[in-house]
Image 1: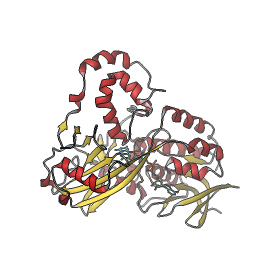
Image 2: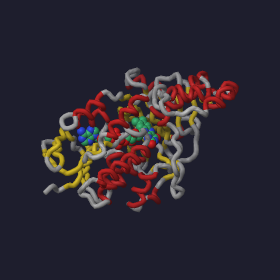
Image 3: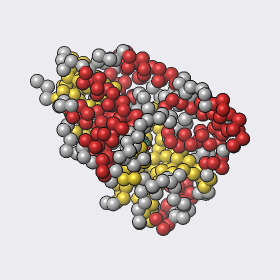
Image 4: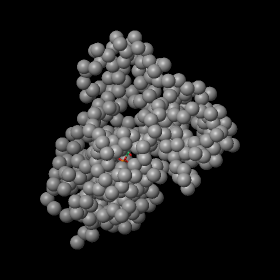
Length: 397
Ligand SMILES: Cc1cc2nc3c(=O)[nH]c(=O)nc-3n(C[C@H](O)[C@H](O)[C@H](O)COP(=O)(O)OP(=O)(O)OC[C@H]3O[C@@H](n4cnc5c(N)ncnc54)[C@H](O)[C@@H]3O)c2cc1C
């Protein structure tokens, strides 16, 4: 008999919400994560015992229903940390800040908005829809760089319908929040004292469909289960499906991915006079964005994560650039850490392709969850996981 009903591959937000829901429904679940930590794109760096800085995702919202519900069932909802309300500013290399509104032409917007609002987002790119809404000048100066800062990649070809989807909000949670120990702490909380087994540092190398379920090969071990949740980045999912589901693997195979290079620095709070901000937008800079620790202030330190465009600058040049913007020298940095982030870079056509895949997949005992299917945010990932778990639970046991 299989010791597990379901194996979840990948320990990011998608995998952890899936594992929680399946286990709460009484399934015996094993979650396998390749890296030494849980969280995936939710990556909190903890350079000092009481200081953390986000190298990946930084903000969660009270519209992330299934994530918050999973946390509430673990009795941990009360631990959410409110992020102080602070804005984003455009920044140049000398650290001069500019308000986003200063880049908006009200005349251009006034002329466009009445026509722009009525068009559906479906089938249009971010540049087409938002450029149509506020005008192409406003898009180039303001919206394009602002969306790129959020996505850590150019937003121009992104599907417009993936941005600003209205969703119900959970009133019991702060509008914008993080967690003690950073956002990764929230995902770790889902795995603590959980009714499922988690193994980190275990990379899955192969998946085979066999009578009664699946065989998963990981670190030389063969594990079996009746059902499978693939909660990995899209390129890994394509590789793992290649043998048993070649048609699905083919659809996922050429899904574009983007890379950005995160560099986090921590310095004594008194060293830099940069105004407190949630983040910076680097319209003409080698970075897409800077995310700060300022919305969760710390008495002694300030922290900044620069999300650089890939392949432009080496480590020393990046540190020199950061120091110039903060008005300090690289010697002022107490801690420095880097990470590479990868995200899907879908065009409009990829959404249609994922919908086709879903339509053919309804009876399969394997769930595809992740940020390449219905949206990029942690909330989108949690929603997708909840829907796919419902589908798996509805299949004959
Ligand atoms: C810089 C940045 C900032 C962001 N900011 C925000 C934000 O503020 N708010 C927000 O809501 N979203 C944000 N996002 C998006 C969001 O964080 C991600 O889309 C989401 O967390 C993805 O979760 P996931 O579980 O689907 O995938 P991932 O987080 O990519 O997790 C996949 C996991 O699978 C594991 N894995 C891969 N291969 C294998 C294998 N063979 N075997 C076992 N495990 C494997 C990986 O190690 C990883 O842990 C941001 C993303 C980035 C990169």
